[in-house]
Image (cartoon, rainbow, N blue to C red; front, top):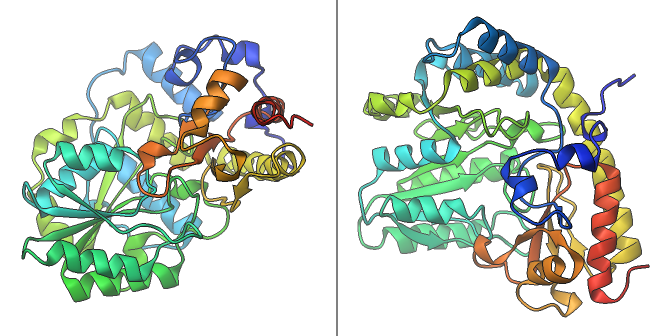
Length: 385
């Protein structure tokens, strides 16, 4: 029997007392279902560990490799992946910072980086900030990797002779697709054929119900990098800490990572993420069960109130990618939902090609808030019932 209901424990009044971005960016009459924060209290072991650290004054600088060791054990237990070697890891402040640092290891300013839009907007921003050039390989209409488009992008990117890097999102944000072993093996084969280095964001991996396939576990991925964190799955974004993982043939590149990068994570962040991986699995299971119920609820709500919205029902994250193009709200329906319905969802436009007419909705909230949000969104279209 499941005793925990992390997404059922907090009411809106309690949530509005929070001072983080999700609940403070918009006026108090707006329901926020946008940025990737969950409406939960962290797992009790994490809370207890942080309390002990603060109360004892253990608030200095991080030390040791316990976080990577905990991640390796979690990966072996959860995904049956025993290839994560803690000796081939490094730390960064967060996943996007880690990805940026890896880009600097395997490419030079001006070099091409392939991405799969629609994709998490910081993929564009951090790549451009690193002075690399974006080359798009759009997803298919089903929200999954289009291997033909990917190979075409590899050819286009490599035409100048510059080294090519592929920034892969696994699972994919925003479509909530978990890439399969077959898909990822094909990606690795294409990358090998065209001399492309693969760098993977796997921050949502622990949220995947069922089997998640880490990219570094597939044949041919030995020269790749993955960057991950416990932050999304255990709601620890404000406690900065991420792990950079090198494949066996990428270890030499990782050795060139400047030591200063490891100064980014906080000691409290390292404590929290390590304890989450070691002692927060039952809590994660409860979150996944609550999210499954919310996925089913969202399907019912859309059918009843917004039948014009198409949703592929991806379950690999707590983010729902909604196709609102048939609602007549233009390229940016999020603006109408905010202005007229007082619901904040992410606009699809910053996600790049394929984002127009879409919104990203965060379902990691209570059934009551999710129901109210969809009802409000339906009122914008004139079909609240």
